[in-house]
Image 1 (cartoon, rainbow, N blue to C red):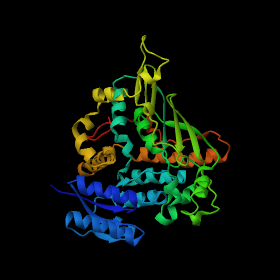
Image 2: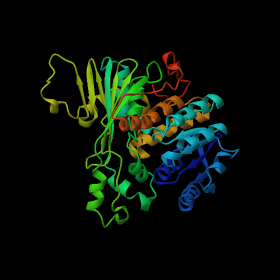
Image 3: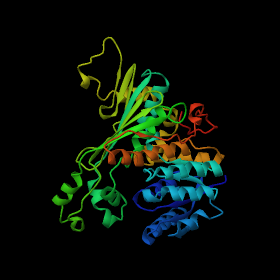
Image 4: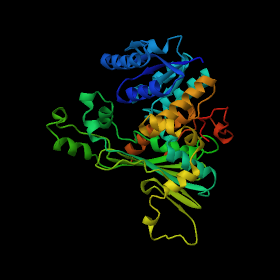
Length: 408
């Protein structure tokens, strides 16, 4: 069996985690090169590959050196948000499949660069949005496809994750989030919730997002946290942050459905993605892991009666991918999502087909960040969301090109 040869760019915490999953779980993949701007991180990635495979990859601080390697089939981008699009475009122009980690864009022009590069080269680019492959997200998608909730009218979700320590530790840990939270105010991390919702609502395949409004609260969480932990973060004394503690984005779609996204990362709370589906016959609520179906005998005033019933529905509507690969995926950690999304990407590379999360998905999901920034800066005004498909969304569908990991 011919192995897929890949180069991995970005060996920070996320990059090392994804590299470990590739080395442990993906038998048909050879990591030929690792890269990071920081020599110690690049060396750590190289050491990991050599220890696992007995082969020494190219270890470099120059991304161009990896992208230009003739022997490489695909480039995986795990670097800081600011670099994703330029690296992806360069890789496509050199004929390399691209798998890029999640994160928002900085300008709309950047998003069009992605789609233009694909249309010019024909080389696929896939956002590695692992939450699209979560067991719950895929089970709910299966429920939607089978009509359990009727016609979907509204979806919501959020990135509810207390990141105060990670952001405040950005200088010591060389983490890009710190500079973003200091200078930007936007929905900076929309895709964990938007990706699964976009698949439910057939975005770019018979439906599309047409406009949004975004509103940001005041920024107090990080400043309070740093002040109360001054001995741990002395270099941040007096730092001011632009990023609002809570950002609420409301999106309207061509078919009349709506989406609400919430960024919530700088106040104390428990983790949740808040995945919620509302339809004419029922709903799913992640925060209580509950399905509620329209029924004459339904107990509308006793919500707790339904809390936790998600297991029953997950078992009945478990997605075929999780039926087949769930045990192996869970062995890989991170709720099995990384194994699933990487398998989807590598399958497309191996077969030479398009990816289940394609360049138009990637561009439109990333565009929410600069659009929300514009809306917030101008008093939460409505902002149009471009049609990155150039009108093809009307007739486009999700024809499976024979890929087992296609998102049906």
